[in-house]
Image (cartoon, rainbow, N blue to C red; front, side, top):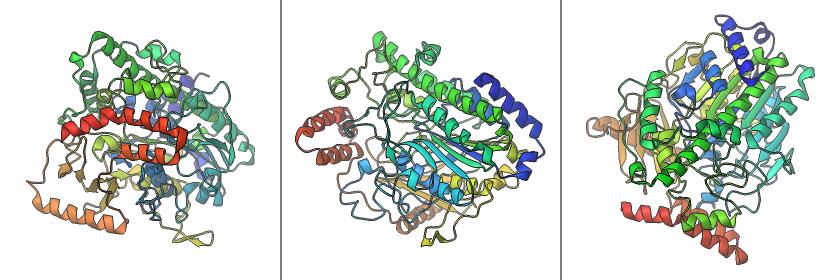
Length: 589
C-alpha cells in the first residue's frame, strides 16, 4: 500500500469510529505518537490554509481536531522542555537555548539551558506505567551524563543533541559545533550513508516499535523532526513539484495564505494583517534574485511535504500491524517559522560562513546534499501568515503554531477548537490519554515540580469550549521578549530589531495578526495584565536581560569563549554573518 493509500485507510477507519470508541481502545491503553515539526509556520500545512501538499496531516486533521489558538515558546529548547514535562520552561531549567545564554545568567540553577533534575518527563512517567517509550530525532535538552534522552525516560533512542544539523549527512550547520552530535541509546552514533533526516527518523521509529509489538504493551513514540529547521534541504523529487509556485513573491503568498486559512475555517472572515518591517520589496529584486528566492521557498515546501510523506509511512506501518485503530496522534511545532535567514545568501558574509563549513549555495543544487539553504525573511512572513513576527519574538508568528490531535480511541471529537492552549498542556493531555496520573510533587523517591499544564480532554470530548478560565493567566519570556495570555487577550512586548520594547494589548481571537493595540481603549485590563505578568516573572524566577544583550551576538561570544586559538577564524566569520543583522538593528533605532 502506498503512503497515500494508508492515509485513506486511516481516514476511513476513523470515520467508521465516529460516535463510538473502538473495541481496542476499550480493552487496552492507547499507543501515543507525538510528532513534532521544527520551525514550522502557522499556515505551512494544508489543513491550516497552505498550498503545500500534506495529505497525511490533512487526513489526521479531517479525522481529528485542529486547534487554531495553540501556543508554544518562541524557540526550540524551551518549547521541548514544556512539551515533555508540562512545567514552565524557566522553572524546568530551559529559559533559552544554552547557546544563547549570557554567562551572568548561567550562575542561576534555572538558567542552564538543559532539562533540570527537578522535573520528570512524560516518557519517564509512561515507562513507569508500563509503556514502551521511543524517541528518534532532535533532543537539544542536554548532552551530558544524566541529561541524555536515554536517561530521561526513553527506552530506545536515536537522537541529535544539537540545535540543528545537516539533513543529508553527519555534519554541523553552524561553526559553533565541531560535528553533528548524534547518540543512540546513550552512546555516540554514526549516521548511515543513505541518511535523509525525515526518512531516517521514521525508519528507526518503525524499527523500535516493531521490536516489541508482540508483547502487547502500549508504546509512546516521540518523533521530533529536523524539518524545517536550517539548513532547509529536501529530495529533488519533492523540490520539482514547487518550482515556479512562488514566483509571485512573498507578499502575494502571505495574502494567499490568509485567504487559505479563512477558507479552511481557521480564522474569522475579516482578519487585519500588517507587513513585517523585515520584508524586502519583491519588485525591487532583479529577475535572477526573484528566481533564486522562489527556489529557496520551493525547497522549504518540499521539506514539509517530505516530512508528511514519511509520517504517512508510519501510519501505513501501524495499519499493517493492526495497531492503528488503537493509536492517538499529536502533531505540532516547537515554535513559529525561522526569520533570520540571510536576505542575500550570495553576500560576502554569507558565503564566508557557508564556505567555511564546506557548503554550496548555488541555484542548481539548492536543497540537495552539500547545499546550504534558508528562506528569506520575506517568505517567513508568508509561512506565519497572517501573524506578526516569527521565531525568537513573542508575537503570534513566533508562538502560535498548528496542533492536530487524532485517533480512533478519541471517538467523536469536534472538528476544531479556538480555545487558547499552551505548550505545557500537551504533557498533561498525553498522560490523560494513557490514564496515568501526573506526579504529585514526588516521583521515584525525589521531589519534582508538578505539571501545570491542563488536560485538553474536555475540549476533545466537547464538554467545554475552553480549559482556561477568563481570568487565568499564562506568562512567557525569552530574552526580554514577553507575553501574557488571559482569556481572548494578550499583552506582548517585542524588543529590537523588529520591536520597540513597548507593551501592547491585543484581542488575539478577532485580531490574531496583532494590528489593533487596545491598551488605550482598555486601560484597566491592560494594567491588570501587566500586574499579572509581573507576578509571573516573580514566580518563575525570570531574570532581567543583561545590559546590551543580543541573542545572535551572544551566540558569537559564547562560541568564541569556547574556541580560543584556531577558533578565532570561526569567530570572525560569525561576526561577518551578523553584520546584516547589526546594520538592520542600528537602522531601526
